[in-house]
Image (cartoon, rainbow, N blue to C red; front, side):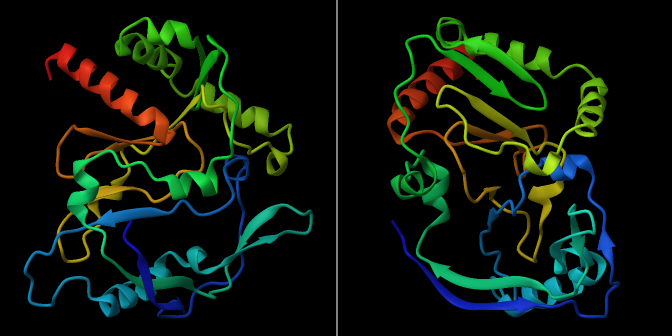
Length: 270
């Protein structure tokens, strides 16, 4: 595995003075995972005159962006009642430059198991029962038995998932009402069973449009998966209407996934 060498690490402050004060967070904000969602963007050199990946230009752009998006230069704090809020302190954001020998083609060409990340973020789990409940966690939750998933085409599970998420905004409104009556800051945030799947939709977000002077990214996705069973659904860069999936699996599950995936694609004649 290619090593990553950190070259610099610093805090970039807004280029101009920014408003102070606090930003109130909704119950939906408090119910979400508290922390960063790290993402990665891979670009190819485009032969521009200014060279590829000018760190100074990105650093200066970050300083200017923090003027408009000044809460990102703040810190999490608590109000008088102990409720989490964003304190707009203008302290800045961390900016790190690093170098790695990892190649984009390595990422794009293969399903690559990453044992090191598994050891860090996925605790050991017992083998599931022969036919445990398989839970799909999204804005809604749908239950299927693993046997039912395995004995039917992929489209069967997809239709069940679509039915669970085709309720308009009624479910979201009911969730907001529910969170009014609970302590959102202390909701459980533990991992999920190996038999479960947690789908997070980034569709419609302009994450793949980040152009720093080298065009659109060849690949964009989450930099880190906290548990196996996470699926991020995203718009595929440079392909109108196409969808990309970032899926976290146990390394021993990946060969079977590749086989099932290839068989399903062949069956659909894609």
